[in-house]
Amino acid sequence: MATFTIELRALVETFGLDEAISWFSSYELSDYLNQGQINILNQSGWTKEKLAKMIIEHYEMREIGFETPAYFIKKAKVFMNEIMDEKAPLIYAKTQIIEPIFDTNITEEFSGKGSSDSNSTSTSNGNGITINSNTPQGQINKETILNGSYASSTSANEGESKNVNDSKGNSENEYIKTIKGNQKKSPIEMLHDYQKYMTAINKEIVDRAGCLFMNIYDRGY
View 1 (tube, helix red, strand yellow):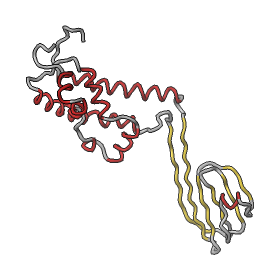
View 2 (cartoon, rainbow, N blue to C red; view 1 turned 180 degrees about the vertical axis):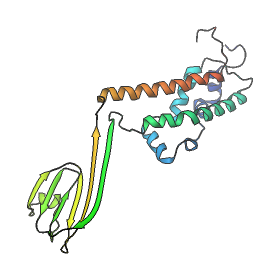
View 3 (spheres, rainbow, N blue to C red; view 1 turned 90 degrees about the vertical axis):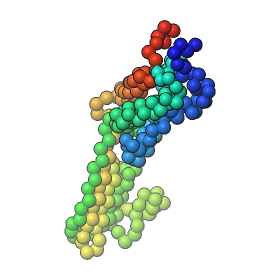
View 4 (cartoon, rainbow, N blue to C red; view 1 turned 45 degrees about the vertical axis):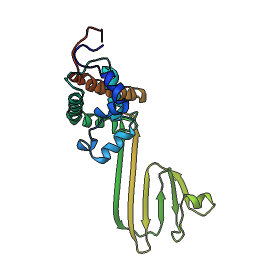
């Protein structure tokens, strides 16, 4: 039973849970992040609605720290806008890695032109198959090889490259190489660090939301 104002749970019962969640999630992420960053944040599983529900569940038995519900709702929205200005970039900094079990993700690209006396075509696709042909007049690729078409040789390779020499001796080279994996920590360690970080930052936001409520603990909460 409330002593000075009204408990948060009573407001939730009056206005409904969805409405109460909106008090703590009405801010726009676009005020702190660009659209690309927001897309990555959304894919990570973190949402402002989940955070809002955490705050409500933590303080549901606490009395609001303002004399009227309307004033409390206004201050709740102001608080969330101010703290997310600080915390949204930090949350993104971790959730930008959709696969947190990787600590290395490097891509190398090369593109150049030159001259050559030969007349051949060589391509290497992302599946690691290299195809060499001494008869570039015909289109040779992975599909034609699997169908039985002629090629001088095939071999396994990583990355993706393209080397084209035309009949005039001009050549064009493109090369893309991607390295992804773990060089410092195991996947389990990386995932543990990711979860630990996100738990800590959400908890800090929830704790700081205490300024919206009465600091009365005579009921043991």
